[in-house]
Length: 313
Image (tube, rainbow, N blue to C red; front, side, top):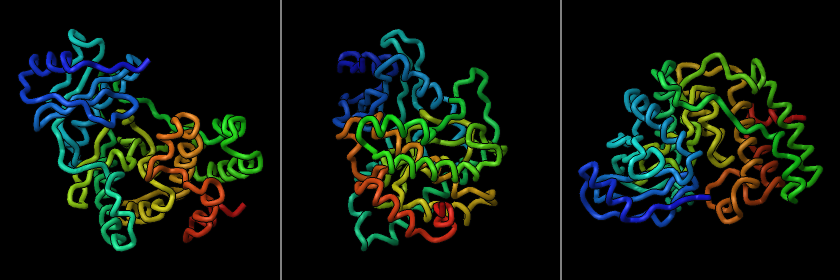
């Protein structure tokens, strides 16, 4: 059962660490953490369940590494794993200005195409810097192990729950197996060039201020793995732009990069209708197109090469 904490408990945390100001629970919390604004400078995140605690432990390792690499992300003011006030570890970070990209509705309008293109370049620039981290000091092994969502694991449940037709599931299965050829050793094993990845760079974890990138947040999924995974959490229509910008800014990308990005995207897109409730799944900016499989195929076949060749089955 998800747990929320009272203002009294949160004030005990602020008193322990000498933090001042009012305490206010965010009206729209995420799935994993109970989130509170502390005064004018800090944000507190407490895992809702004990099994969610490893995400904060991973952050305690990933955030300092990301900052050292030059990535814009809020630094950690307090990391407390004493469990004397609450039964889990918690993190207090510094607030960053702006709002999640998902809330910047004006960026989806045609007149802001160039602004969105510049923002994509900014996001990619941060990822290129992050992906230069090839070694992380993690003596307590707090970073997550390499993981991903395999599209094939979710097809049968999606059919059983009526979220995909049998024909649609078979088409996705063929596409998934074709995309697996883009992995040198198959998707079950990470690529040889493992780097530090955020593994959750979607529009709710990208903060923007005055339509410019403010910070990347929420490092709970961070691990060492394939850099392609960090381009796979945006809506489908942005994948070619993200990859094109990444390939222009990175020193090099290996063959099959676009296919791996699409395979990771497909894995999350197929699994999330099962794991998220309908209201959450219908959020704007999410991965699966609102028109379902038909729109997915239409958008995909409208992509430039090499994307179209990836779908030639």
